Image (cartoon, rainbow, N blue to C red; front, top):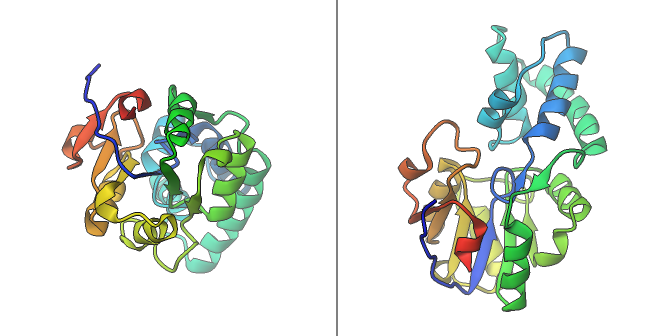
Amino acid sequence: MNTTKVPAYDAYLFDLDGTLIDTAPDLMHALNETLVHAGYGKVGIELTRLWVGHGAKVMIAQAVKHQGEDELNAAQLDGFFAYFLERYSEHIADESLPYPGVVESLEVLAGRTHKLGVVTNKMQGLSTQLLRELDLYRFFNIVVGGDTLQVRKPEPQPILYACNELVSIPADTLFVGDSSTDVNAARAAGCPVICMRDGYNHNTPATELGADHVIDSFCQLL
């Protein structure tokens, strides 16, 4: 385990899936229900982890493509997406859990009066629901979802919007993520960025994502 010590910042923004919370098990169950409902076969947890991070529609499309099918048209994808949202919302926190050290670290950071926020490509309603069900919502001053603005990560606007709401300049706001999507968004916004080693990094080693630091544990933020 590396012992990188991260400097203190005025504000901290976090990705959600694969960074704060291991959401893949519940996403996989909802995805498989959707696939079976549409006449396809199920997929496993490792493939689900590989596809998480760009939004549920992309995940569904990739799962269908993986089974050798033609790409879904817009109407088909919208229908699959609606079915997925119903299934996922009903079981959003059955097996999803914060990563080790997350709760304790958030408590310390909040206790030091740092400004905390979430910037994710998960829909804002689902993000808020998940954070509430896992008793994490209380730590955050802002939650920006994939549908909060007209664009999502890797565009910088969601991060800049969060910084504006927190009244924190980007250079003093650390972004904590797990993928190239997070790194690219943070860089474009002018924020320092670190990555969790074992997040949903789409098969690219965390050390190759271009972050300022790679950490193994949230405790290294303290």
